[in-house]
Length: 268
Length: 193
Image (tube, rainbow over all chains, first blue to last red; front, side, top):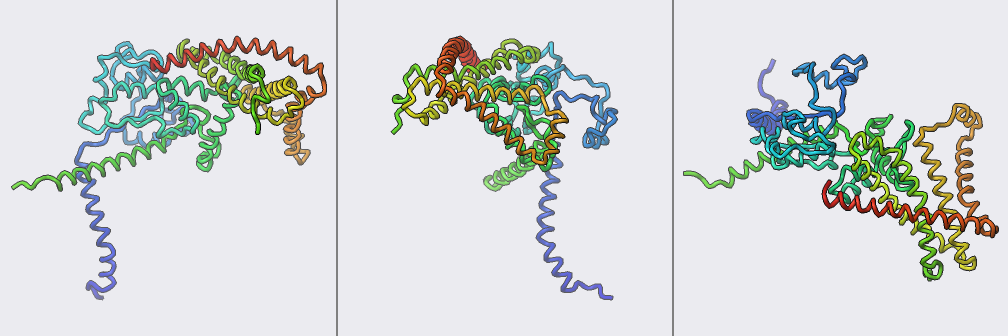
């Protein structure tokens, strides 16, 4: 039995060598990244009741992925939201105070001035801080804390909005929330589907909406649960986008660092 | 070469605008007012009023677009028939179209659906699409028939003119609502409410 390094082994090795070198560089890169601070991702679900989550005992399996995550996570069983709707609830989460302290109790309202620089973003000020929400009212809070956010991703970037919706939001940039509600409000009367207030233009909205959602038909043959609203949004798409953005951020950062090292004057 | 002034006087354009705008405004106000309590519960009264204001501004814009289409359609009507007949025909046509559009929207808004018997009947005929085409043709007939009939009935024309006069007056009132709505929209966009 020959145990020598034959021609075939050499060819195999030569094919594997460049991949091995690349993998070793990549591993080095990720090791360096791993030794850095960990990424912190905060995902907030608005109007999401524990009563309908299998994780909290709902009979039907509704949240298999969250249950998987829960297997290796700390799960709170007696947590109460700061408040009962977006503006005060999100403000409580971002400032760590109760609504009567931060005072963002009206719809689409802001926290009081003394909390402008006391948000969760301020706590992580040596991190690269990204924020995204498809909810206009949460974006109002991001706007308040903007100076502590490095990258505030525009709402429309990850929304499944049609051209007509974005047109209205851009046209009434100072009053995006109310104008878009008037434009796409589904004014059903008795449990039906329905259109917005306009008699003919609403047909155009529906046409554009259907075009937007047509691309999801193969993945969601029964339709997307959020379709027909002004907040069409797919969590998995957004998570993928954020994942890619984080990787590209790290790669860019590493490239920038490399450039700084290469351009630095030689020290003798 | 078509010249709009050969076909319409300013008064005609104004009458057609009012007739086109009325159903759109009535529809927006109806939906807005039946929606206002829902909106107020979830926001506040001013925001709810603002949503309706935006609806009225969109309705005004929609009315202007519809007017352009109606005026262009009017160019297809022979000059021989005269201005009053042209305006009467176009007014009747746009009103019928808006009524059909309201009924078709109500179908969705009220959550109506065909009964099982009708569905079974359609299946049994083996040609359900023929029925769909038939209903569409009937809708087109309802849309066109009154405006064509105006050509042959002076009585219908005078009745329609009288109705149009009164409806136009009502629409002038709704234009006041539009002015309020435009003011609210401008205020909100300037103040960044």
